[in-house]
Image (cartoon, rainbow, N blue to C red; front, top):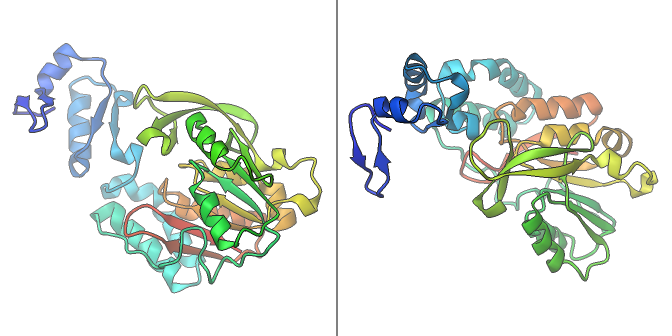
Length: 308
C-alpha cells in the first residue's frame, strides 16, 4: 500500500494506492510495517474511516522499534527494574532494551554460555526435576541432558503444538523419565487460541486476527499438574520460553515457587513489560530470590531472567 505509487514490488506483490484500498477493500485488517511513521500512517487511516481495530503494527506483533508516546506507558516499570536489579549487567540490559525500542540500537549478548544454563548462576545436580516450558521439538531437553551428563530425576516438557509434540515424543520415546505433555502452560486449566508462525516454532496468544493460522490449544498450570504430588516431587528447575505467556505460567506455579524455591530461567523479551512484571511477580512470591538478566544473543530476542 502506498500514497503515491501503484504497480508491483520487486518481489511481484501488487502495490495498492491507499484510496483504492478504502474503496475496494474497506473491511481488511492493515499491518503497518514502517514503524517510525506508525502514528502518522495510523492517523491517516483513521481519518479515511478505517476502524482502530483494523490497524496493527509490529509494535502490536513483536516489539522492534517505536516512538516515545508508544513507550511512555512502560517507563515507570523500566525505572523500577533499573533500580531493582543490583548487578551492572542487568541494569545495562534494561537501558539497552529501552534504546532498542526507541532508537533501534542493537543489543549485544552478555555471555557465551548456553541459553537457560548460565554456568555461574544455574548449578545443576544429579537429581533435577526439570520443567521445559515450550518444548518445540526437544532442543532444550537435548541441551539439558548434555549439561547434566544424562543424570537427572525427571523431565516434564510442555508443548501445545501437536506437530512439535509428536516429533519430540518420537525423539524421547525410550526415556522413561522424560514426560511430554501436549499442553501449554498458563495460570489455570482452560483452552486458549494461538496464532502459529514459522512452522510451529513460534505461537502467540491470539489477541487480534493476524492470520488464518489460529488454533485452539489446551493449557494447564504447574500447580495443577503437581497438586497431588509430594514436595519431594516438585520441580527443582523451571525454564519458560512460551511466547509471551510467561507471566501467566508463573502465576500458575505460585505454590511450587513458594514451597520449593526452584531455580528458574524465564524468557523476558516477548513483551516490553516482561522486564519488570516478571521480576515483580517472582519477588512477590519469594523475596529471597536473587534475580539477574542475561542477554544470550546479539538481538532484541533471547533476554533471560534467571532466578535462584
